[in-house]
Length: 260
Ligand SMILES: Nc1ncnc2c1ncn2[C@@H]1O[C@H](COP(=O)(O)OP(=O)(O)OP(=O)(O)O)[C@@H](O)[C@H]1O
Image 1 (cartoon, rainbow, N blue to C red):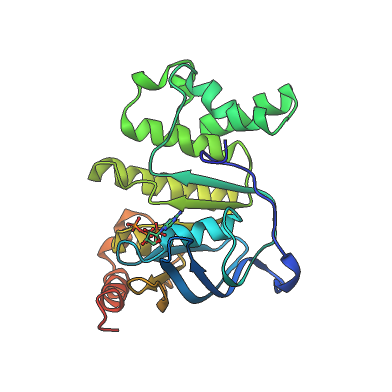
Image 2: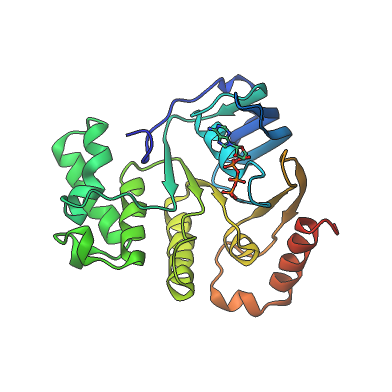
């Protein structure tokens, strides 16, 4: 199940400062194949913060998320996580086709060994939170791509995670559905107050969702710069017309393209 979403174990929480949820300290990652994916990356994410990571293809963004989850160990430096309560969301919702929406959402709570009543409470809340109550009895094949992604989100939410790691979750969706999913995620983050690390190829998505955007260089990935978004957390689609939004998008894009 590790390849779907999972609860992970906190790694070496000793060097976390107060209020930090994730901390990477001078991390380098070289795979056995000889590829150096990351070099000297240091990053701290505060409890409840939403951090987006953008960078050229192959610069080590997914590697950084896997390190944060404790799925990989860095070759140099250290990664610390203040909690064991972590959910991972991938671009592919990976639903089990023979299980209904409800039973898919329940899956990880079942594997985590939660009692039946507790599972039922969490599943109901998660299905409701993503607006799928009317579809709880449907099979995945009856759902649109956006709805399947909502099920994937609900399955993660049912773990009531303190940390949500999202690897390009909306990359396969059409633009309208993607906009809807971004608003859904903003709303969930406001309500559930989890810490989020999101990998995306979209600069505007990063600025729209995050408190801070981390811009990485081409492989081996280093942090080229970090942009403080500085927009109110309580934002909606209209913020895209705000000068501050367009300024931040330009700032991130300039860093991304080496002009920062
Ligand atoms: N398990 C692995 N074994 C060997 N090399 C790997 C492994 N995972 C990733 N890599 C390599 O490490 C580099 C970074 O990969 P990673 O998937 O982290 O980048 P990314 O920024 O997420 O890419 P993309 O934006 O294209 O999804 C790539 O060159 C990739 O081929």
